[in-house]
Length: 322
Ligand code: FES
Image (cartoon, rainbow, N blue to C red; front, side, top):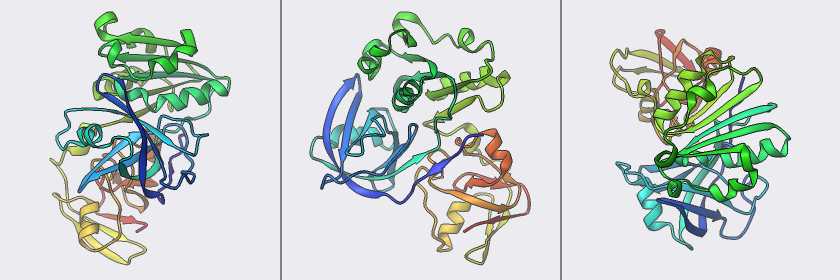
């Protein structure tokens, strides 16, 4: 079973000490504290929040080395994002600019194993870089399958070159799509699959790993799964907040997060669509209807934590450690 590590306490304005283009529409940002003090520790797979404006918070994976506490590096793709998060990064965060940063947070930790298969689509390569470095340093057997639209759109290819034939680059315009059928057809005992990229790729990987041993597949999604945003069939339930001593009603058209916030309870959220993990809350009792895109099957079954921005309750009452 994977472990989920959350470190929430760090929040600061960091300085952009370097910003440069590393592939078509991809900029690499290096961030440091204004006084040069050490940044908090993190582990491969972690992401941070960039606070880019009022109600405009975006999550980006750290893709530098956890051993370097002097700076953090992010790789950010300019996307046709409805609220303009990545556009703001590309247009405003030049050398010397400051940006509010929260985290790091890790819902995609690298579990120790002898063999790994890493699958990255486009900017999904970012969390893989420190994971690969760690797996390689630990002497694990590993391979990376890295697909992108074109070679020029694929970031950090130069950094991967020293790994030689452990890397398979698949620019779509030259070689077509990643051959997931060939790669994942045979379940392999003892091999962990880590995948990050667009929803279509992750859904395809998930589908093909259905016959793999439980716990083999680890995914990080950038956008919410369908179930997170579905509201049809929602029912009303009561939420009892154990530490606050409050009992609140969650109507079918409101989330637990919204109801708690409206009642003045201190809750923190960021993406509000079950992707970032900021609102993770301990469950004391109740049959949780998990709608997030973070927890794996074992974590859902354990019923110990829930993302209160999207997940609901199947029983009449939910009790939370809030
Ligand atoms: Fe991001 Fe709930 S606020 S998962």
